[in-house]
Image (cartoon, rainbow, N blue to C red; front, side, top):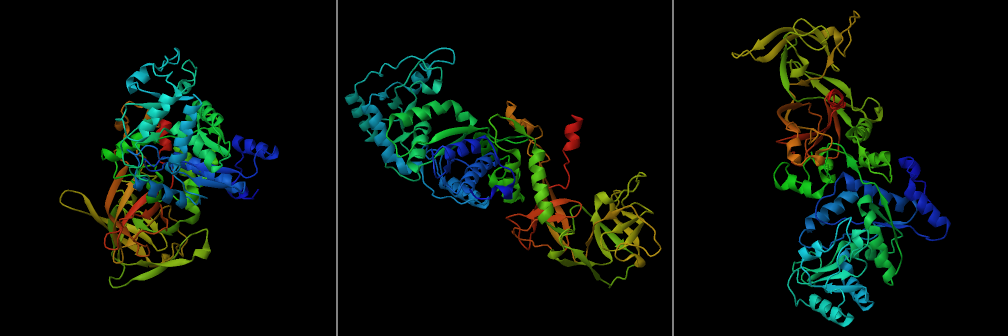
Length: 559
Protein backbone atom coordinates (compact mmCIF):
# COMPACT_ATOMS: atom_id res chain seq x y z
CA UNK A 1 0.00 0.00 0.00
CA UNK A 2 1.29 3.47 -0.88
CA UNK A 3 1.71 6.21 1.70
CA UNK A 4 -0.56 8.65 -0.12
CA UNK A 5 -3.10 8.55 2.70
CA UNK A 6 -0.67 10.60 4.73
CA UNK A 7 -0.79 13.32 2.09
CA UNK A 8 -4.53 13.85 2.27
CA UNK A 9 -5.04 13.03 5.91
CA UNK A 10 -6.83 10.16 7.60
CA UNK A 11 -9.14 8.67 4.99
CA UNK A 12 -10.07 5.47 6.84
CA UNK A 13 -13.70 4.41 6.49
CA UNK A 14 -15.88 1.31 6.46
CA UNK A 15 -15.20 0.68 2.76
CA UNK A 16 -11.46 0.58 3.33
CA UNK A 17 -12.09 -1.77 6.27
CA UNK A 18 -13.93 -4.16 3.91
CA UNK A 19 -11.13 -3.95 1.35
CA UNK A 20 -8.48 -4.55 4.04
CA UNK A 21 -10.41 -7.64 5.18
CA UNK A 22 -10.78 -8.93 1.60
CA UNK A 23 -7.06 -8.51 0.98
CA UNK A 24 -6.16 -10.22 4.27
CA UNK A 25 -8.48 -13.14 3.46
CA UNK A 26 -6.99 -13.53 -0.01
CA UNK A 27 -10.32 -12.83 -1.74
CA UNK A 28 -8.67 -10.27 -4.00
CA UNK A 29 -5.13 -9.32 -4.89
CA UNK A 30 -5.40 -6.19 -7.03
CA UNK A 31 -8.04 -3.62 -6.12
CA UNK A 32 -10.01 -2.43 -9.14
CA UNK A 33 -12.67 0.26 -8.93
CA UNK A 34 -14.60 2.32 -11.45
CA UNK A 35 -16.30 5.68 -11.71
CA UNK A 36 -19.31 5.10 -14.02
CA UNK A 37 -21.20 8.32 -14.87
CA UNK A 38 -23.97 8.41 -17.43
CA UNK A 39 -22.99 11.06 -20.01
CA UNK A 40 -26.32 12.90 -19.80
CA UNK A 41 -25.12 16.03 -18.02
CA UNK A 42 -22.15 17.70 -16.39
CA UNK A 43 -20.53 16.40 -13.22
CA UNK A 44 -21.31 18.20 -9.95
CA UNK A 45 -19.90 18.35 -6.43
CA UNK A 46 -21.71 15.12 -5.53
CA UNK A 47 -19.83 13.29 -8.26
CA UNK A 48 -16.58 14.70 -6.89
CA UNK A 49 -17.11 12.66 -3.73
CA UNK A 50 -17.45 9.45 -5.75
CA UNK A 51 -14.47 10.37 -7.95
CA UNK A 52 -12.25 10.98 -4.93
CA UNK A 53 -13.42 7.74 -3.32
CA UNK A 54 -13.01 5.45 -6.34
CA UNK A 55 -9.81 6.91 -7.71
CA UNK A 56 -8.40 7.50 -4.22
CA UNK A 57 -8.90 3.88 -3.17
CA UNK A 58 -7.33 2.59 -6.39
CA UNK A 59 -4.37 4.89 -5.86
CA UNK A 60 -3.88 4.05 -2.20
CA UNK A 61 -4.05 0.30 -2.76
CA UNK A 62 -1.79 0.37 -5.83
CA UNK A 63 -4.69 -0.79 -7.98
CA UNK A 64 -6.50 1.04 -10.74
CA UNK A 65 -9.76 2.76 -11.53
CA UNK A 66 -11.64 2.89 -14.82
CA UNK A 67 -13.66 5.83 -16.04
CA UNK A 68 -16.61 4.04 -17.62
CA UNK A 69 -19.46 5.75 -19.38
CA UNK A 70 -22.71 3.94 -18.63
CA UNK A 71 -24.29 4.94 -21.91
CA UNK A 72 -27.44 2.87 -22.35
CA UNK A 73 -29.85 5.77 -22.92
CA UNK A 74 -29.01 7.29 -26.34
CA UNK A 75 -31.79 9.88 -26.22
CA UNK A 76 -30.11 11.80 -23.38
CA UNK A 77 -26.40 11.21 -23.94
CA UNK A 78 -24.12 13.54 -25.88
CA UNK A 79 -20.47 13.89 -26.80
CA UNK A 80 -20.42 17.27 -25.05
CA UNK A 81 -21.06 15.54 -21.73
CA UNK A 82 -18.43 12.88 -22.40
CA UNK A 83 -15.81 15.54 -23.10
CA UNK A 84 -16.77 17.53 -20.01
CA UNK A 85 -16.61 14.48 -17.74
CA UNK A 86 -13.13 13.55 -18.95
CA UNK A 87 -11.98 17.14 -18.50
CA UNK A 88 -13.39 17.36 -14.96
CA UNK A 89 -11.85 14.08 -13.76
CA UNK A 90 -8.44 15.11 -15.10
CA UNK A 91 -8.75 18.59 -13.59
CA UNK A 92 -9.42 17.07 -10.18
CA UNK A 93 -6.04 15.36 -10.52
CA UNK A 94 -7.00 11.77 -11.29
CA UNK A 95 -5.98 9.45 -14.12
CA UNK A 96 -8.02 6.50 -15.26
CA UNK A 97 -6.63 3.10 -16.20
CA UNK A 98 -9.11 2.59 -19.02
CA UNK A 99 -11.98 4.61 -20.45
CA UNK A 100 -14.56 2.14 -21.79
CA UNK A 101 -18.21 2.61 -22.65
CA UNK A 102 -20.88 0.24 -21.48
CA UNK A 103 -21.94 0.25 -25.14
CA UNK A 104 -18.62 -1.43 -25.97
CA UNK A 105 -20.12 -4.50 -24.30
CA UNK A 106 -23.46 -4.57 -26.14
CA UNK A 107 -22.63 -7.75 -28.07
CA UNK A 108 -21.63 -9.62 -24.90
CA UNK A 109 -24.62 -8.27 -22.97
CA UNK A 110 -26.94 -9.48 -25.71
CA UNK A 111 -25.46 -12.97 -25.55
CA UNK A 112 -25.87 -13.01 -21.78
CA UNK A 113 -29.50 -11.99 -22.18
CA UNK A 114 -29.98 -14.91 -24.60
CA UNK A 115 -28.36 -17.18 -22.00
CA UNK A 116 -30.91 -16.06 -19.40
CA UNK A 117 -33.72 -16.84 -21.83
CA UNK A 118 -32.29 -20.30 -22.49
CA UNK A 119 -32.18 -20.92 -18.72
CA UNK A 120 -35.84 -19.92 -18.45
CA UNK A 121 -34.86 -16.90 -16.38
CA UNK A 122 -35.93 -14.20 -18.82
CA UNK A 123 -38.93 -13.74 -21.08
CA UNK A 124 -40.31 -11.32 -23.65
CA UNK A 125 -43.26 -9.37 -22.32
CA UNK A 126 -45.72 -7.78 -24.72
CA UNK A 127 -47.61 -5.70 -22.17
CA UNK A 128 -47.55 -1.94 -22.53
CA UNK A 129 -45.42 0.13 -20.17
CA UNK A 130 -48.57 1.23 -18.33
CA UNK A 131 -49.74 -2.38 -17.92
CA UNK A 132 -46.35 -3.46 -16.59
CA UNK A 133 -46.41 -0.58 -14.14
CA UNK A 134 -49.95 -1.36 -12.99
CA UNK A 135 -49.16 -5.04 -12.47
CA UNK A 136 -45.99 -4.37 -10.54
CA UNK A 137 -47.80 -4.01 -7.22
CA UNK A 138 -46.96 -1.72 -4.33
CA UNK A 139 -44.78 -1.84 -1.26
CA UNK A 140 -47.67 -3.52 0.56
CA UNK A 141 -49.16 -5.60 -2.25
CA UNK A 142 -47.43 -8.18 -4.47
CA UNK A 143 -47.40 -7.78 -8.22
CA UNK A 144 -49.28 -9.83 -10.79
CA UNK A 145 -47.58 -12.19 -13.21
CA UNK A 146 -47.54 -11.08 -16.80
CA UNK A 147 -49.84 -13.08 -19.10
CA UNK A 148 -46.71 -13.61 -21.25
CA UNK A 149 -44.55 -14.92 -18.40
CA UNK A 150 -44.93 -18.57 -19.40
CA UNK A 151 -43.92 -18.21 -23.01
CA UNK A 152 -41.67 -21.05 -24.13
CA UNK A 153 -37.92 -20.63 -24.38
CA UNK A 154 -38.16 -21.05 -28.15
CA UNK A 155 -40.78 -18.31 -28.51
CA UNK A 156 -38.82 -15.96 -26.27
CA UNK A 157 -35.64 -16.54 -28.26
CA UNK A 158 -37.47 -15.88 -31.51
CA UNK A 159 -39.13 -12.72 -30.21
CA UNK A 160 -35.92 -11.38 -28.68
CA UNK A 161 -34.04 -11.95 -31.91
CA UNK A 162 -36.84 -10.16 -33.73
CA UNK A 163 -36.50 -7.26 -31.32
CA UNK A 164 -32.79 -7.09 -32.12
CA UNK A 165 -33.44 -7.31 -35.87
CA UNK A 166 -35.78 -4.31 -35.88
CA UNK A 167 -39.01 -6.22 -36.49
CA UNK A 168 -41.03 -4.34 -33.86
CA UNK A 169 -41.94 -0.82 -32.88
CA UNK A 170 -40.78 0.99 -29.75
CA UNK A 171 -42.62 -0.34 -26.70
CA UNK A 172 -44.08 -3.34 -28.51
CA UNK A 173 -42.02 -5.80 -26.46
CA UNK A 174 -39.50 -5.77 -23.60
CA UNK A 175 -37.27 -8.46 -22.14
CA UNK A 176 -37.85 -9.09 -18.43
CA UNK A 177 -36.06 -11.23 -15.87
CA UNK A 178 -38.20 -14.00 -14.40
CA UNK A 179 -37.63 -13.69 -10.65
CA UNK A 180 -40.53 -13.19 -8.22
CA UNK A 181 -43.53 -10.90 -8.64
CA UNK A 182 -44.27 -11.28 -4.92
CA UNK A 183 -40.83 -10.20 -3.75
CA UNK A 184 -40.92 -7.59 -0.99
CA UNK A 185 -38.20 -5.80 -2.99
CA UNK A 186 -39.98 -4.23 -5.97
CA UNK A 187 -36.74 -4.21 -7.94
CA UNK A 188 -36.90 -8.02 -7.98
CA UNK A 189 -40.39 -8.18 -9.48
CA UNK A 190 -39.40 -9.29 -12.96
CA UNK A 191 -37.43 -6.16 -13.82
CA UNK A 192 -37.12 -5.06 -17.44
CA UNK A 193 -33.70 -5.89 -18.90
CA UNK A 194 -34.07 -4.66 -22.51
CA UNK A 195 -36.37 -2.28 -24.37
CA UNK A 196 -36.80 -1.35 -28.03
CA UNK A 197 -35.62 2.17 -28.80
CA UNK A 198 -35.09 3.57 -32.28
CA UNK A 199 -32.50 6.21 -31.51
CA UNK A 200 -29.02 6.87 -32.84
CA UNK A 201 -26.37 6.11 -30.25
CA UNK A 202 -23.32 8.37 -29.90
CA UNK A 203 -20.96 5.35 -29.88
CA UNK A 204 -22.72 2.55 -31.78
CA UNK A 205 -24.69 4.67 -34.24
CA UNK A 206 -27.69 2.77 -35.59
CA UNK A 207 -26.27 -0.72 -35.00
CA UNK A 208 -28.78 -1.42 -32.23
CA UNK A 209 -32.49 -0.84 -31.79
CA UNK A 210 -32.61 -2.60 -28.43
CA UNK A 211 -30.82 -1.21 -25.41
CA UNK A 212 -30.13 -2.84 -22.04
CA UNK A 213 -31.28 -1.09 -18.90
CA UNK A 214 -28.86 0.16 -16.27
CA UNK A 215 -29.54 -2.59 -13.71
CA UNK A 216 -28.70 -5.28 -16.25
CA UNK A 217 -25.69 -3.47 -17.69
CA UNK A 218 -23.93 -2.18 -14.63
CA UNK A 219 -22.94 -5.32 -12.75
CA UNK A 220 -22.03 -7.19 -15.92
CA UNK A 221 -19.83 -4.28 -17.04
CA UNK A 222 -18.13 -4.45 -13.65
CA UNK A 223 -17.55 -8.17 -14.16
CA UNK A 224 -16.09 -7.67 -17.64
CA UNK A 225 -13.64 -5.09 -16.30
CA UNK A 226 -12.63 -7.17 -13.28
CA UNK A 227 -13.93 -4.59 -10.82
CA UNK A 228 -13.41 -5.95 -7.30
CA UNK A 229 -15.44 -3.40 -5.35
CA UNK A 230 -18.32 -1.59 -7.06
CA UNK A 231 -18.93 1.50 -4.94
CA UNK A 232 -22.41 3.05 -5.29
CA UNK A 233 -24.46 5.60 -3.41
CA UNK A 234 -27.21 4.49 -1.03
CA UNK A 235 -30.08 4.76 -3.51
CA UNK A 236 -28.65 1.61 -5.15
CA UNK A 237 -28.83 -0.42 -1.95
CA UNK A 238 -32.27 -1.81 -2.88
CA UNK A 239 -30.87 -2.70 -6.30
CA UNK A 240 -28.04 -4.83 -4.90
CA UNK A 241 -30.12 -8.05 -4.76
CA UNK A 242 -30.77 -7.65 -8.49
CA UNK A 243 -27.09 -6.84 -9.12
CA UNK A 244 -26.16 -10.08 -7.35
CA UNK A 245 -28.96 -12.14 -8.94
CA UNK A 246 -27.86 -11.29 -12.48
CA UNK A 247 -24.23 -12.14 -11.72
CA UNK A 248 -25.23 -15.38 -10.02
CA UNK A 249 -27.11 -16.63 -13.09
CA UNK A 250 -24.31 -16.11 -15.60
CA UNK A 251 -20.74 -17.20 -16.14
CA UNK A 252 -18.76 -13.97 -15.94
CA UNK A 253 -15.01 -13.25 -16.00
CA UNK A 254 -15.06 -11.99 -12.40
CA UNK A 255 -17.40 -11.51 -9.46
CA UNK A 256 -17.54 -7.93 -8.16
CA UNK A 257 -19.26 -6.95 -4.93
CA UNK A 258 -21.39 -3.83 -4.57
CA UNK A 259 -20.93 -1.57 -1.53
CA UNK A 260 -23.11 1.47 -0.87
CA UNK A 261 -22.16 4.73 0.79
CA UNK A 262 -24.03 7.93 1.59
CA UNK A 263 -24.30 10.41 -1.26
CA UNK A 264 -23.24 14.01 -0.79
CA UNK A 265 -26.07 16.30 0.27
CA UNK A 266 -24.88 19.89 0.51
CA UNK A 267 -26.81 22.86 1.84
CA UNK A 268 -27.93 25.63 -0.53
CA UNK A 269 -27.45 23.45 -3.59
CA UNK A 270 -29.09 21.02 -5.99
CA UNK A 271 -27.38 17.85 -7.17
CA UNK A 272 -30.24 16.50 -9.24
CA UNK A 273 -29.22 16.43 -12.91
CA UNK A 274 -32.85 16.93 -13.87
CA UNK A 275 -33.16 20.10 -11.81
CA UNK A 276 -29.76 21.36 -12.86
CA UNK A 277 -30.87 20.82 -16.44
CA UNK A 278 -33.96 22.90 -15.71
CA UNK A 279 -31.82 25.76 -14.42
CA UNK A 280 -29.79 25.69 -17.64
CA UNK A 281 -32.66 25.23 -20.10
CA UNK A 282 -34.91 27.80 -18.44
CA UNK A 283 -32.15 30.43 -18.49
CA UNK A 284 -31.78 30.90 -14.73
CA UNK A 285 -28.04 30.37 -15.21
CA UNK A 286 -25.82 31.01 -18.22
CA UNK A 287 -24.96 27.34 -18.75
CA UNK A 288 -23.58 24.22 -17.09
CA UNK A 289 -20.39 26.13 -16.28
CA UNK A 290 -22.14 29.11 -14.72
CA UNK A 291 -19.97 29.97 -11.69
CA UNK A 292 -23.01 29.81 -9.40
CA UNK A 293 -23.60 26.17 -10.30
CA UNK A 294 -21.92 23.52 -8.17
CA UNK A 295 -20.97 21.61 -11.29
CA UNK A 296 -17.27 20.87 -11.45
CA UNK A 297 -16.96 23.08 -14.54
CA UNK A 298 -18.89 25.89 -12.82
CA UNK A 299 -16.71 25.65 -9.73
CA UNK A 300 -13.58 25.67 -11.88
CA UNK A 301 -14.76 28.80 -13.68
CA UNK A 302 -15.58 30.48 -10.39
CA UNK A 303 -12.06 29.87 -9.11
CA UNK A 304 -12.29 26.75 -6.96
CA UNK A 305 -9.08 24.77 -6.93
CA UNK A 306 -9.03 20.99 -7.41
CA UNK A 307 -7.08 20.72 -4.16
CA UNK A 308 -9.86 22.46 -2.20
CA UNK A 309 -12.51 20.10 -3.61
CA UNK A 310 -10.44 17.00 -2.88
CA UNK A 311 -9.73 18.33 0.61
CA UNK A 312 -13.45 18.92 1.16
CA UNK A 313 -14.22 15.34 0.15
CA UNK A 314 -11.59 14.12 2.63
CA UNK A 315 -13.08 16.31 5.37
CA UNK A 316 -16.65 14.99 5.03
CA UNK A 317 -15.54 11.35 4.90
CA UNK A 318 -17.45 8.25 3.82
CA UNK A 319 -20.38 6.95 5.87
CA UNK A 320 -23.35 4.58 5.53
CA UNK A 321 -25.88 7.15 6.69
CA UNK A 322 -27.20 10.12 4.71
CA UNK A 323 -26.60 13.53 6.23
CA UNK A 324 -26.52 17.11 5.01
CA UNK A 325 -23.18 18.93 4.92
CA UNK A 326 -23.09 22.62 5.76
CA UNK A 327 -22.03 24.82 2.87
CA UNK A 328 -19.56 26.43 5.26
CA UNK A 329 -17.47 23.23 5.24
CA UNK A 330 -16.89 23.54 1.48
CA UNK A 331 -16.23 27.25 1.78
CA UNK A 332 -13.75 26.71 4.62
CA UNK A 333 -11.83 24.15 2.55
CA UNK A 334 -11.66 26.67 -0.27
CA UNK A 335 -10.67 29.63 1.89
CA UNK A 336 -7.92 27.64 3.59
CA UNK A 337 -6.51 26.61 0.24
CA UNK A 338 -6.75 30.04 -1.37
CA UNK A 339 -5.33 31.81 1.67
CA UNK A 340 -2.18 29.75 1.25
CA UNK A 341 -1.82 30.19 -2.51
CA UNK A 342 -3.60 33.38 -3.63
CA UNK A 343 -1.43 36.30 -4.77
CA UNK A 344 -2.34 39.55 -3.01
CA UNK A 345 -3.38 42.57 -5.03
CA UNK A 346 -5.38 45.75 -4.54
CA UNK A 347 -8.59 46.40 -6.43
CA UNK A 348 -11.54 48.73 -5.92
CA UNK A 349 -14.87 47.36 -7.11
CA UNK A 350 -17.13 50.31 -6.23
CA UNK A 351 -14.80 53.26 -6.71
CA UNK A 352 -14.88 56.68 -5.15
CA UNK A 353 -12.26 59.17 -6.43
CA UNK A 354 -9.99 60.87 -3.92
CA UNK A 355 -7.90 63.93 -4.87
CA UNK A 356 -4.90 64.50 -2.55
CA UNK A 357 -4.62 68.24 -2.92
CA UNK A 358 -1.17 68.71 -1.37
CA UNK A 359 0.44 65.92 -3.44
CA UNK A 360 2.31 67.26 -6.52
CA UNK A 361 0.25 66.84 -9.70
CA UNK A 362 3.15 65.63 -11.84
CA UNK A 363 4.57 63.27 -9.24
CA UNK A 364 4.22 59.51 -8.99
CA UNK A 365 6.01 56.96 -6.86
CA UNK A 366 6.05 53.26 -6.23
CA UNK A 367 5.74 51.17 -3.11
CA UNK A 368 6.91 47.60 -2.58
CA UNK A 369 3.94 45.35 -2.01
CA UNK A 370 4.35 41.76 -0.86
CA UNK A 371 2.79 39.24 -3.21
CA UNK A 372 1.98 37.08 -0.20
CA UNK A 373 2.56 38.19 3.41
CA UNK A 374 3.24 34.63 4.65
CA UNK A 375 5.37 33.57 1.71
CA UNK A 376 8.28 35.95 1.04
CA UNK A 377 9.58 33.60 -1.66
CA UNK A 378 6.80 34.89 -3.90
CA UNK A 379 8.49 38.28 -3.90
CA UNK A 380 7.02 41.75 -4.28
CA UNK A 381 5.54 43.99 -6.94
CA UNK A 382 5.68 47.74 -7.46
CA UNK A 383 2.46 49.51 -6.50
CA UNK A 384 2.12 52.93 -8.20
CA UNK A 385 0.81 55.99 -6.33
CA UNK A 386 -0.29 59.40 -7.64
CA UNK A 387 -2.28 62.51 -6.71
CA UNK A 388 -5.64 60.94 -7.58
CA UNK A 389 -6.61 57.55 -6.25
CA UNK A 390 -9.72 55.41 -5.95
CA UNK A 391 -10.99 53.97 -2.69
CA UNK A 392 -14.00 51.75 -1.98
CA UNK A 393 -17.17 53.79 -1.66
CA UNK A 394 -17.99 51.71 1.44
CA UNK A 395 -14.78 52.98 3.05
CA UNK A 396 -16.21 56.50 3.31
CA UNK A 397 -19.12 57.71 5.40
CA UNK A 398 -20.12 61.34 5.60
CA UNK A 399 -21.91 61.09 8.94
CA UNK A 400 -19.88 58.33 10.51
CA UNK A 401 -20.66 56.78 13.91
CA UNK A 402 -17.96 56.74 16.55
CA UNK A 403 -16.85 53.18 15.80
CA UNK A 404 -16.50 53.71 12.05
CA UNK A 405 -12.72 53.53 11.65
CA UNK A 406 -12.50 54.31 7.97
CA UNK A 407 -12.55 57.65 6.14
CA UNK A 408 -14.96 60.47 7.04
CA UNK A 409 -14.71 64.28 7.11
CA UNK A 410 -11.88 65.38 9.39
CA UNK A 411 -10.78 61.79 10.07
CA UNK A 412 -7.37 60.35 9.25
CA UNK A 413 -6.78 56.85 7.85
CA UNK A 414 -3.81 54.89 6.60
CA UNK A 415 -3.54 53.97 2.92
CA UNK A 416 -2.16 50.45 2.59
CA UNK A 417 1.61 50.64 1.82
CA UNK A 418 1.44 54.43 1.35
CA UNK A 419 0.53 57.42 3.58
CA UNK A 420 -1.86 58.81 6.14
CA UNK A 421 -4.60 60.90 4.54
CA UNK A 422 -7.26 63.17 6.04
CA UNK A 423 -10.58 64.01 4.41
CA UNK A 424 -11.04 67.76 4.01
CA UNK A 425 -13.96 68.17 1.62
CA UNK A 426 -16.80 66.20 0.08
CA UNK A 427 -17.69 67.03 -3.55
CA UNK A 428 -21.30 66.33 -4.59
CA UNK A 429 -23.27 66.63 -7.81
CA UNK A 430 -26.52 68.51 -8.30
CA UNK A 431 -28.50 65.52 -7.04
CA UNK A 432 -26.58 65.58 -3.78
CA UNK A 433 -24.65 62.39 -4.57
CA UNK A 434 -21.03 62.15 -3.51
CA UNK A 435 -18.76 62.37 -6.56
CA UNK A 436 -15.31 62.68 -5.01
CA UNK A 437 -13.33 63.59 -1.92
CA UNK A 438 -10.58 66.12 -1.34
CA UNK A 439 -7.94 64.97 1.10
CA UNK A 440 -4.48 65.90 2.30
CA UNK A 441 -1.60 63.55 3.03
CA UNK A 442 1.22 63.55 5.53
CA UNK A 443 4.47 63.14 3.53
CA UNK A 444 6.25 62.04 6.71
CA UNK A 445 4.01 58.97 7.01
CA UNK A 446 5.38 57.18 3.94
CA UNK A 447 5.09 53.43 4.35
CA UNK A 448 2.20 53.70 6.76
CA UNK A 449 3.69 55.09 9.98
CA UNK A 450 4.28 58.54 11.39
CA UNK A 451 7.54 59.79 13.01
CA UNK A 452 5.55 61.53 15.76
CA UNK A 453 4.07 58.20 16.82
CA UNK A 454 0.42 59.05 16.29
CA UNK A 455 -1.81 56.08 15.59
CA UNK A 456 -4.71 55.64 13.24
CA UNK A 457 -7.23 52.85 13.63
CA UNK A 458 -8.25 52.43 10.02
CA UNK A 459 -6.31 51.09 7.05
CA UNK A 460 -7.95 51.06 3.63
CA UNK A 461 -6.89 49.83 0.20
CA UNK A 462 -6.74 52.00 -2.90
CA UNK A 463 -5.70 52.12 -6.55
CA UNK A 464 -3.85 54.93 -8.31
CA UNK A 465 -6.26 56.57 -10.79
CA UNK A 466 -3.48 57.32 -13.27
CA UNK A 467 -2.38 53.70 -13.41
CA UNK A 468 -5.69 51.93 -12.79
CA UNK A 469 -7.04 49.25 -15.12
CA UNK A 470 -10.79 49.40 -15.73
CA UNK A 471 -12.55 46.05 -15.22
CA UNK A 472 -15.87 44.33 -14.61
CA UNK A 473 -16.35 42.08 -11.60
CA UNK A 474 -18.98 39.42 -10.98
CA UNK A 475 -19.77 39.19 -7.27
CA UNK A 476 -21.01 35.61 -7.06
CA UNK A 477 -22.85 34.22 -4.06
CA UNK A 478 -24.95 31.15 -3.24
CA UNK A 479 -27.55 30.38 -5.90
CA UNK A 480 -30.30 29.62 -3.36
CA UNK A 481 -31.52 31.41 -0.26
CA UNK A 482 -32.63 28.33 1.70
CA UNK A 483 -30.56 25.38 2.94
CA UNK A 484 -32.62 22.71 1.17
CA UNK A 485 -34.03 24.06 -2.11
CA UNK A 486 -34.69 20.53 -3.37
CA UNK A 487 -37.35 20.06 -0.68
CA UNK A 488 -39.41 23.00 -1.96
CA UNK A 489 -42.21 22.07 -4.40
CA UNK A 490 -41.04 24.86 -6.71
CA UNK A 491 -37.32 25.34 -6.11
CA UNK A 492 -37.34 28.38 -8.40
CA UNK A 493 -38.89 30.41 -5.58
CA UNK A 494 -35.68 29.96 -3.57
CA UNK A 495 -33.36 31.38 -6.24
CA UNK A 496 -31.16 34.10 -4.78
CA UNK A 497 -31.69 37.38 -6.71
CA UNK A 498 -28.31 38.56 -5.37
CA UNK A 499 -26.40 35.47 -6.52
CA UNK A 500 -24.54 37.60 -9.07
CA UNK A 501 -24.06 41.33 -8.66
CA UNK A 502 -22.17 42.82 -11.62
CA UNK A 503 -19.79 45.70 -10.84
CA UNK A 504 -18.91 47.36 -14.13
CA UNK A 505 -16.62 50.15 -12.89
CA UNK A 506 -14.00 48.27 -10.93
CA UNK A 507 -10.42 49.52 -10.87
CA UNK A 508 -7.38 47.25 -10.56
CA UNK A 509 -3.77 47.97 -9.82
CA UNK A 510 -1.75 47.24 -12.99
CA UNK A 511 0.05 44.15 -11.66
CA UNK A 512 -2.93 41.88 -12.33
CA UNK A 513 -3.03 39.47 -15.27
CA UNK A 514 -6.25 40.20 -17.06
CA UNK A 515 -6.92 37.11 -19.18
CA UNK A 516 -7.88 33.55 -18.31
CA UNK A 517 -5.14 32.08 -16.15
CA UNK A 518 -4.83 29.77 -13.13
CA UNK A 519 -3.71 32.58 -10.81
CA UNK A 520 -5.98 33.08 -7.83
CA UNK A 521 -5.89 36.59 -6.38
CA UNK A 522 -6.85 37.85 -3.01
CA UNK A 523 -8.07 41.38 -3.57
CA UNK A 524 -7.14 42.79 -0.20
CA UNK A 525 -10.10 43.20 2.14
CA UNK A 526 -12.53 42.06 -0.57
CA UNK A 527 -12.13 38.35 -1.15
CA UNK A 528 -10.69 35.85 -3.63
CA UNK A 529 -11.02 36.46 -7.36
CA UNK A 530 -10.01 34.88 -10.65
CA UNK A 531 -10.22 36.01 -14.26
CA UNK A 532 -13.18 34.65 -16.21
CA UNK A 533 -12.87 32.63 -19.41
CA UNK A 534 -14.29 35.61 -21.30
CA UNK A 535 -11.79 38.10 -19.88
CA UNK A 536 -9.62 39.94 -22.43
CA UNK A 537 -6.97 42.66 -22.08
CA UNK A 538 -9.47 45.14 -23.54
CA UNK A 539 -12.39 43.99 -21.38
CA UNK A 540 -11.13 42.39 -18.16
CA UNK A 541 -13.75 40.29 -16.38
CA UNK A 542 -13.14 38.76 -12.97
CA UNK A 543 -15.23 36.43 -10.82
CA UNK A 544 -15.38 36.55 -7.06
CA UNK A 545 -14.63 33.04 -5.92
CA UNK A 546 -15.32 33.59 -2.23
CA UNK A 547 -15.49 36.33 0.36
CA UNK A 548 -12.81 36.48 3.04
CA UNK A 549 -15.34 35.63 5.73
CA UNK A 550 -18.58 33.68 5.90
CA UNK A 551 -21.15 36.41 5.27
CA UNK A 552 -23.99 33.88 5.67
CA UNK A 553 -23.17 32.90 9.23
CA UNK A 554 -24.91 35.92 10.77
CA UNK A 555 -27.91 35.51 8.46
CA UNK A 556 -28.37 31.86 9.43
CA UNK A 557 -27.93 32.68 13.11
CA UNK A 558 -30.68 35.28 13.00
CA UNK A 559 -33.21 32.97 11.33
